[in-house]
Amino acid sequence: GYCYVKNEEWVDLGDEGLLWGYTIVQFPSLDPLTGEERPIPYGYGFIELDGASTRLQHFVTASDLRKLKIGLRMKAVFREERKGSLADILYFKAVE
Image 1 (cartoon, rainbow, N blue to C red):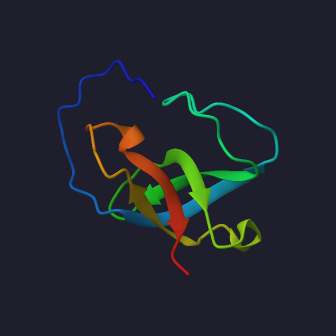
Image 2 (image 1 turned 45 degrees about the vertical axis):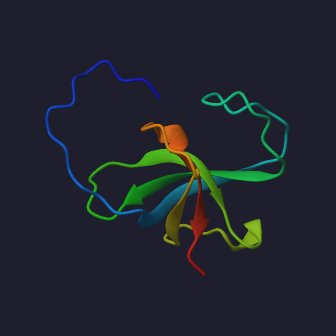
């Protein structure tokens, strides 16, 4: 998303964290960052990366969406070509 506050302090974080909440979406919609249609069903959740004090919202998945649960470890899956934005993360996948 967009933020209108200047970032003055950066913290290095890894690509794994915990799932704090989620929902399973059953209706078609467009990804607001890319404009691409999302395949349904899909998961959307709050992930707190290891070492962070805040959570971010992003797409989440597992080998079976029924395996998603609060407290599950998640790992970011990145686009092959990165541009330096949140859209570089395709989704977070459950560490199973």
